[in-house]
Picture 1 (cartoon, one colour):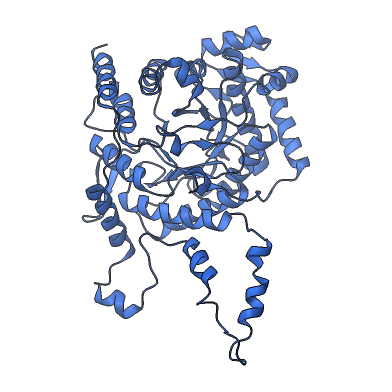
Picture 2 (cartoon, rainbow, N blue to C red):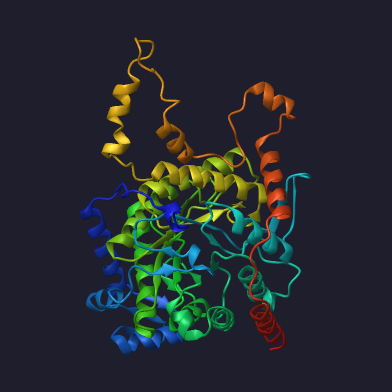
Length: 488
């Protein structure tokens, strides 16, 4: 039986940048790093980079990177890492041959389809979405999807992570960490699960997102957290968010240069601090709406930026992570169109990790219905992106001769009764919520629309799926970590 990761194997990606294009973007990014520099508000990172040979202005916190130093530090980023699940069945190799999809995080509201309004998100929404994510066949990685309004701000990140660890067996991605102290607590939790810090350094059951600040700035607390993650060998998704026309030039090439410089700067800082720490080249790039200046996370330009950033990651031999987000305010046609374009493009263009399942309105609103629909979208995209086997067996030349021409002589004229057809047809993609039943049958069943069907599926999963929980002793130790953090 194929492994979970095998479900996400895709064929060789289609390139959208020429090799010369990538070379020019890379060299321009290095030029910016060397001659303009990057402002790094983390003294921990500046000290490590200064020791490695970077030029540091402590008065302005601007760090300049000699090109040879950048090349040396980036060469230390490990290739071929594995994002591990709690169970090995859910391990995800980052080898350039797979396309994985994650939930998104930081939602502050939840869409209520029945009342067509929003409500504040609570911890129960993390519990529910972790259960649904554990069940969904095409969701690869779970990220706590909301900020729970019923949990004190001081501990909402680690409470959400504790709940996630306890429920799903899939890899966990932490997004909302904003301080090194929060990073330390999550490392402590993950270490309890795998059997110690040394084991965590070898088995990456969690990873963390750290965003850069465009243009050309690394936040102090978040970068300190990245240094903490690096010491524990927790993979860091370095996520640039440059917006064309606002925090980068209003061209795709110029935006990629800014993102490249920021990403390499944080990756270099991590390597200067802890050589060999896993870093992932991330991007959630966009353009502004020229009429209002508002962010356009799901524009065609953002889609191209996402794909091109993935190619720049491969150019510097780093794993890639990206997403374009969803601008739609409600679940439905717009959100499915936006997420469908990203999912298919990612499978075809080779983005390794793709962010965004289940969120609306620039990742601020959770929709249970959209989670179900997005999983279906991903299943279709992955199916379209798979390698096409062309072999003696798949060509079926003998069968074609045997079946012959429709209606002629003693030939069969149909493949329906062939044994191979019965076996191979089982591999066709089948939706979990949509079907091809006749109109009359759909009408007799109540003429349910797509969002109704998606809500019913989410409700069914919550009622019937019982995830394999953490060992009770480990779960209690995680609870104790949360209690100690609350008292600190």
